[in-house]
Structure formats: C-alpha cells, structure tokens
Length: 410
Image 1 (cartoon, helix red, strand yellow):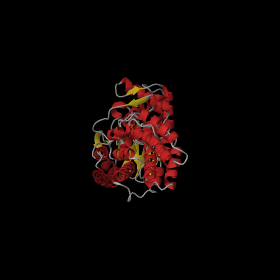
Image 2 (image 1 turned 135 degrees about the horizontal axis):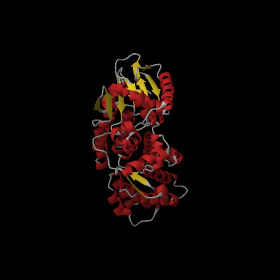
Image 3 (image 1 turned 180 degrees about the vertical axis):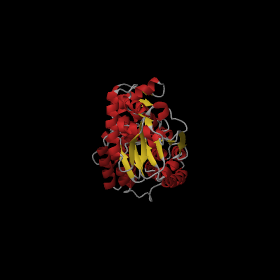
Image 4 (image 1 turned 60 degrees about the horizontal axis):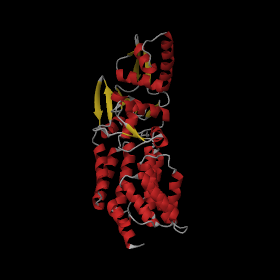
C-alpha cells in the first residue's frame, strides 16, 4: 500500500474526511475509490459514497476478498445511517465471516456492531444481545471501544437497566477522549443527555408527571398496577398482559386506568374505544362484549366491575393504578407520536423503514406522516421509493421508550 493511501486511511480513522480526500480525490484505483467512498459517507453524501464503494468492490481482484468485504461493511453502515433497514443482512454476515476467516478482527467486530445496531432499531433485543455477547472489546482501539460501549448502553437503555447504561456511557466517554475524535465525543455526550431528559408521562389521580428513564425503571420495579401505553401492555410486578394486537381492549384499559379510582361512563368508553359521538344500543351491546373480553384478559391481575354509570378497575393486589404514556402523545396522538419520535433522531427515514421499526403497516405510517406534514412537523424529499422523511429533533425529550422493544420484565 502506497504512502498516500496509508495517509488517507489514517485521516479517516482520525475523523478527518477532508484530509483523506486531499490525498486520493483524483485517483481511480480500487483502494482510493474505497477511501473516497468512506470519506463521502462521513461528509453526508451517501448516494455518492455508495457508488464509489460499489465501484471499488467490483474493481478489487478475486484474491482481494478482504478488501471487497470491507467495502460491503462500509456500505452496510451507510444503509444503517440512512435508515435503509431493508438492506440485506445476509450480505453483511457473509462479509463479516470473510473478515474473521482472514484475521481482520477489528473490521469483523465493526460489522457485528452494525448488525446489533440494526437489530436494536427494529426492536429485536434478544438477538442483539446474543450477537453482542460474542465480542470482547478488550483488544479494540479507543474508537472501536467507544462504539462498543455505545451499543452496550443502547441495549441497557432498552432493557431499562439505567445503571448499566450509565456505566457503559462513562466507559465510552473515557474511550472517546482517548480516540480524540470530536464526532464520537459528541455522540457519547448526546447519549448521556438522554438519561437526564423526560422519557415518559405518568398519569395518576388526574395529575400528570414527566419521568426520566431511571424513574421509569423504578416504577416498573414497584408494586404499582401500570397501564403501559408505551408498549400497549397492562402489567403488575412480573405479570404482563399484552394488548398490542387488541387496540379496542387497550383503549378501554387506558380509559379505566386514567380515571381510577373513579369509574368511567359507558358513553365515554364508547367514544374512547369506538370513536362514536353518541352511544346507541348497538354500541352498548358491543361495549359489554369488549368489557367481557378485557375482564377475561386481565383476570390474573385485575377485575373490571360494573357501576351505575359505567365500569371501573379493581386491581387484585395493589392500591394504586397509573398510566405510563408517551411524552408526545398528548399533542400528536399515539401513532403520530411514535413516528415523530423515530424521526427526531435527525436521520432521514423511508416509510417502509419506519413501519419495520414500529412493527406496524406501511399505510398506518404513511397516514401519520401525512398528518404530521400537514401540521408542519415533518418534511419529505424525493419521490417513490427514494422518498425520505425528516424532522428536527424535539427538544427536551428522549425517545428511547418509543421504540417497540421488549423490556426486562417482558
């Protein structure tokens, strides 16, 4: 490898894409194309970066499998950053296996980190933990250790193990200081701020309170009966009843939880669950059926009793009922709040990627996007499959709870 290629690679490793381009901008050999592609990706020109990386991969000879695999890993990282969650994971797995086979452990580890980050985005936490457990960060250089600890912290936050997350971020902060890469330091600082900003709303006894992640962790470990609107479950201690696929039952449960210890009138429940402005006899009959289904679903942890004017929650072994809700749902509605939360990371998303991350239909996401666009909250660019959506970050809120990931007690 010649001196210019070596110098360009070192510049990229130090977070200096412009310095790398100065050395290889006019060269067309495969290593230069690959380095130019990575530099363009660091500068945010993802479309040009992908073209250069694919040209480099094609130009490398049959005996340069490692170089081609590195190009694949770089393209996978671009796909992740640009939220192309449909990018073929098997291609990344094959590249990682090639790198491991040829002893390039550092880039193989980077490939695994990319896989774990993708699994985190789409809520597959168990798979992400198993993949991460196969890595030992001890021999990594500072920049790679920083990336590793950020992934560890991300997993811990989604499991609501906030002490573990904070410890990982402190280790990441030290490693980023050793790496002396400003972008890494900024990413770690941003992750640390997530721990100290509101993550959810607590609704209880007609009052509302904003909670940080540590406070949510304490709440879920308590004896409180919780209607969890962040994941559409009803939970008490270790018993979790999922109503994710039963929106009518969850709407009823949330209405009863918000009103507790009072009851809720039949008219209010009909409006909440069915969207009807006036309750007729057919609505009342349907309400009786759905209340019976809710009573059966929640039998292990609560009863739903009839009152003179409606229905009320009667938990079996607790004296307090609360609702845990998204911090943005009051203003935008639950579907729109979930979409807006993912867009708040500042990246550009396709509607298909949002649907995959939220585990819902693409049409549901498109309706939410259209409503948010009409309200001036999001904007799009491109057309057809190239259409992407963006939003400016919502100040003062962390969105970690809006991701559809299971938590420790699930």
